[in-house]
Length: 458
Image (cartoon, rainbow, N blue to C red; front, side, top):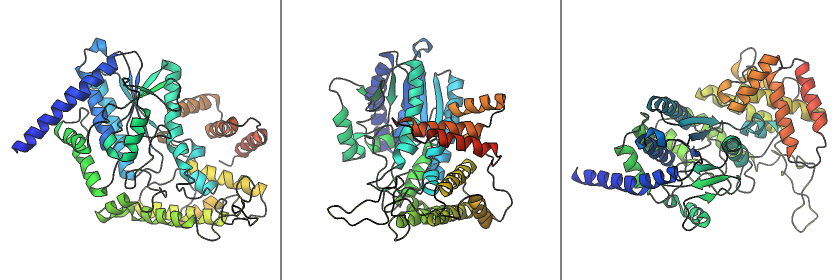
C-alpha cells in the first residue's frame, strides 16, 4: 500500500510539474486554437484529461483559445471501441458546458464514396496489405484532415495536440525524433498548411499513463477502469488518431478496424473472443476470409480497374489475379457480411452503403455488359436471402453518420426540396475527379447520377 502511495505521488508530481505546466505555457503562448486528437485509447484519454484539468485551473479570462476534440470513426471500428468513443464524447460535451470550458467535440467519418465496404464490395478493391494499404488515406487521414482544414479556414493557424509517446515503439520514437525541431515545442504538420503538431506526453511511459488514469479520476466522469478492462481483454494496444503518413496506422496487436488485413492475425479480436466476447466471432471469421481471398486463384480479375494488364518484371508474361475482386466474389463478401451482421447483432454496414454499392454495380454492368448478374436489384436479393425480410432499408442516410458539413447540406436540400442523397453523390463525383487535370468522364457520371435519382430508384 505504501508503495502504491509513493508511486501515485510520483506520477502526480511528474505530470503536474513536467506536463501540466508545460501544457499551460503552450496554451497561453499564442492565439492558435487547439485540435486534440482522441481515439478512445489510454494515451489520448490521458492527454485529454490533462488538457481538461489544465483549462479548468486557468482563470476564465485566460481560456481564450477554443479546444476542438476530434475523433474518427472509420465505420469498421471494433464495436466496443466505437461505442466507448461515442459515450466519452457525449460526457465531455456535457462536462465542458457544465464547467464553462471552451471545449467541443466532433466525430468524423469517411465520405460515403470512401468507406471500406463501398470500395471493397462496390468497386472490388482487394483486401489491404502492406503494399496496397488503400484504406488508411480514405478512412482515417482524409476525414480528419478535412475537418482540421475547415477549422483552419475559420480560425487561421491551429495546434494539433496528439497523445503520441516515444516508448510506444521504436518506430514511433524515430518518427517523433525525426520531426522534432530543437528548442521548439511545435513542429509543422507534414501535410496541412498552417497546422502545427504538439505532443506533450511523448516522454511518458505506458506504466505512467496507466497510473495517472487509475489514480486521477476522469473530469467528465469517464470510466477509466472500464478502459483498462478492455485492454486486458484484448491484450492489445491503441490505434492512434492518424493525421498524416508519418503516423503509424496501427501496431501488430491493436484496437482499430476489425476488418484490418494488413496484419496476419488480429490478436486483439482473437483475445476478446477468447475472453467472452463471443458475438465477435462472426466478425473475426469474416476478417480472416477476406484476408485469404486476396490471393485466392480466380478471386480477382486479371485486368486492373484502369484497364491495364501488368507484366511480370523482366518478362513478357502477364500477371494474373492482380485486378479487383470479381463480381461473384463481391457478391459472396456481401452475403457473408450480412450473415455476420445477423449472427453478431452488430450493425456492420449502413443502408447508405448498400445503396451506393448497387449504384456502382449498375454502372459497371452498363459499361461491361459481359459481366451480368449485378445490376438492378442484386443487393436487395442478397439482403432478402439472408434476412428473409421485405424491403431493404435503403432510405436511412442516417444522421449519426453525417458530419456537420453534410448536416448543413441535408438541411439546405430539405428546404429546397432537392434529394439530399443526389446532391451528396454529385459532390462525391466532383471530388473524385477534382485532382485530375483533365476531367474526362465527369459530365457523363454526373448526368447518370441525376438520371438515377430522377427515375426514383432510391
